[in-house]
Image (tube, each protein chain N blue to C red):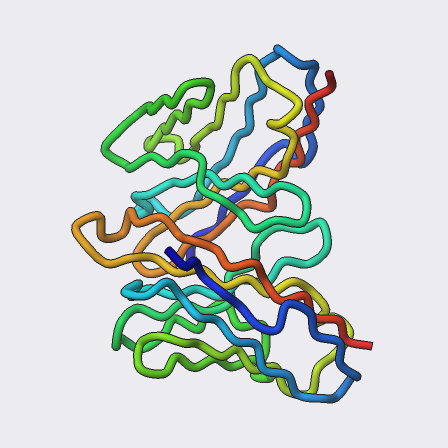
Length: 110
Length: 117
């Protein structure tokens, strides 16, 4: 089955700096890679996703890149703000199920 | 519209008791997932239902865990003979059918916080 690894587990940046979170996956058949944001005490919510036929996708301050050959994908947040502080999960989907990374706790210091 | 709902929101039980957790997916969503999230940890996949197909149970940690989905809608996750290590938040998510197919977003419920004493 799919195995997703996520790094780093914690990340602290100054407001305005960029943050990068990286994930690797094991199943070459995976074709969908979403990123979820989970604020303290709340449910995970989708922030951006990318399909396997695309190498990069951007939505305002958030971008995701995918390298299918190397089987890794990354989340980039630019001009970070305190409200970006949360736990971020990457995921990879192949066939039926979705497997999540262990999460990255991002802290943006004002 | 209404999102995914779960009940109860909190459940405290004694070790050895059985518990049932309920998930009501968004109406019309054909895919339903159960995850477990231990304190400060990631999302652990438990089981996946898609329409009338046989569920993917590959994530269930032991035979004490089982889940059903009746009529393609409501799902119940049952944990028998609960243990303290079962304490976690159990999250349910659903996805719609349609052209997006495997790329559909998962919409999460608020979760059930289970505490086994």
